[in-house]
Image (cartoon, rainbow, N blue to C red; front, side, top):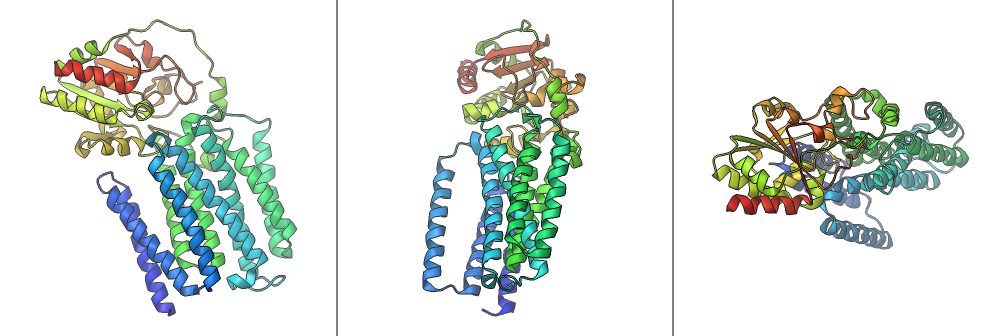
Length: 465
């Protein structure tokens, strides 16, 4: 295959990746965006295989590996629940990071296969690219594993504050820079091993002190890290498609993280350094239980049926109960009764950006009824009912009133400004951030305890009658 044709095909793949990112920016075009991404990746993989033309044995190994990986991916995609999507994303990020480390190791031990020299005579630029890709990949791997454990609740979502953690991170960072310099200067596998080891430790120490309220930003940032790791390895391999793809993922992930930090009133620099949210979270303590106003599905149906405007606020509880379809059915009944129904989405509702948008799109909720926080927050004061279904931290007024709260400073949906707040929840437990929701005790709040799907089904039944 000629160099010009290869460059042209890689360029076509890159354009399709850009179109994929553009499509994924909106639920209305997300499926088309996915198609563009898959076509682009197919072109990139096919071009790479044709460019290098592996031996029959090499091609066989590649096909076996692709079959195993593709089979696992297809099985996971079919079986995974939408509620587990944030964990799945974090787990996939860890695999990208691990792949970068393994490719860097392969390039070091077999440089002639990558066209970067021979053992003991690897080009200095390639050594630097190799070390950078391995370091970022190792940080991404362990950081993503910690994020997965926290999101999957196999590890506490509360910040785990190590003694002198900032000093530890600084020392690990300085050690990493030193080992990179020594590796590039000596081409010794010993320094490569040490820089990977230090990077693995740094991934843990950066992510472990971050609490659940900030985990969506962490997932987005790890996505960016995985992209830069791939781009670094792309330079080592001399693969234009990998460089383009990695740069797109890295830059888009960083931009998304910046937007989310701005939306949550967090410092972008502190996200990168992995030190935000810990101190205030540690100061938050358990509070005395107070009485709440409790209602039934019939009460909720009566209140909403006689309302002029209802704003639905979906959250992780809706995702767990898989209540999005029956929720749309409830909204349809309300609209038939002349009620104005809209949906308010917080940027980090559901532990991952866009999680609620995807669930509502799955239930065929009209896109023009779904609004982001900045577009609908001012309308809560005019709403008769705010119907909160499993959204806890993103509706908690403590974010505005309690400086000691782990979520203090995070913009929230102003549901407390509605005339009546109907709050669906299993119990009085705190949200993922471990903070008690002050909204439960407001005089205009009525709690509806129970499984979200079953409760909404009862409301639908009451509305139908």
